[in-house]
Length: 301
Image (tube, rainbow, N blue to C red; front, side, top):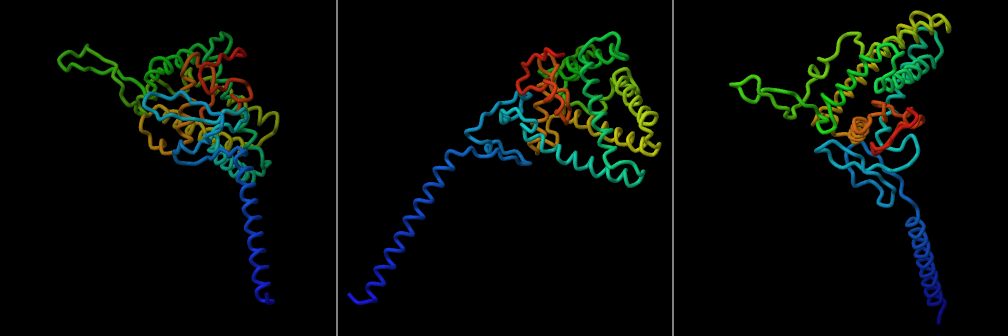
């Protein structure tokens, strides 16, 4: 055997060893990946098939006609993909806070503090709206209006709303309660400006702004900017809440909206003493009023 033949045999053996090593490495990698739990994929558009097959999931209660929604069962604040929308909300808050700091010469975090205080006040307001507490201002009227919202206008069986309307044109007294879409005007018609329903929240907001001026010596321009931020957040929150109760809303193209709607639907179930948040449910997580099922009894409240 000459030198050329020996070199060919040697190269062939080296190539075979390399192939064997790569095969072992690939097999080892596949074995490791088979035992590794795949991450929960989050997406903006609806694709319920992308939930990991081996993840512990919970099927959320949903209004009639809604597609099934499975979410990962974990104890973290970011347990559902709906919370991905909070990233954009906080980004907007941070940008607004820096902008107001530049304009009014306040601290960069001032607007963030205003937001978190107002968020806590909203949670407390929503909590008391489901309880009769005689010593809380506006509580009786707020409780009645909230009861009307939950059990008359948007009961769990008709989460998208019911309207009484005549079915017999010859007899105007003959009414039925067929399910109909509720317009923004229909939703707002039972409310009045500075009503007893929002009265406590307005009062608490006023106290916060006055305290910011008298105790923390915030400038009037800073307080005006904070009030403007509250008004924008209130409008967005009220609009989003109304969207939950509108069937075939254009936001249904996003998965986070379906999940938030399901969490709000759970709020309408049972005792309605859980999932108080409309968009941000972080406080519900920390204070024990959050639930995926709608059957949790919140003994703290």
